[in-house]
Length: 78
Image 1 (cartoon, rainbow, N blue to C red):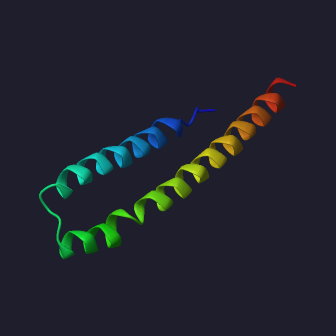
Image 2 (image 1 turned 60 degrees about the vertical axis):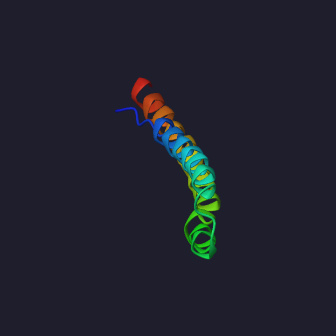
């Protein structure tokens, strides 16, 4: 059975969020008006909880897939 690696994708997603936050903090130095605040509220703020939820779901899925792989390996070896 082929091993499925979900952790590297999850790590990339987490890193991308951190990089976005760093870039956004930098952008706020020069773009700090009503439009930037609206953009932050509509597009940046919703990302953190959505990504957290997605990463948690990926973690649960990884556990299920690992359990399934062990079950399949146990059936094949017995």
